[in-house]
Image (cartoon, rainbow, N blue to C red):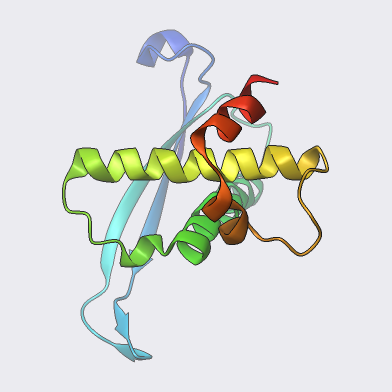
Length: 141
């Protein structure tokens, strides 16, 4: 469902439509249904004009956005740093660890872009050797 709005109507500068997407989730454990499906409504504010894209094009854009996030930093944080297995219960501590992991990924990407990463040296190996003074030097260039 899409609703045309003006930025003034909803207080969001540059917003021209609100998009509601209904998602149905089916819990699955070991390939078998594990419960009743649940419905979630997600809302998106968009600067795209109301008739600028079709419903299918907007859904494709939303899926592409989440695909990029899942295959980008979230995937790397889980594979390289085992984030899904993290046992930190304190919300503040978890946020600090997520920030440090993002910092490590960012410095790795900067080093890789500048040609400072040797061939075959992965994110995990590179981050194990990274010290704060080196990360600060990389970020300040």
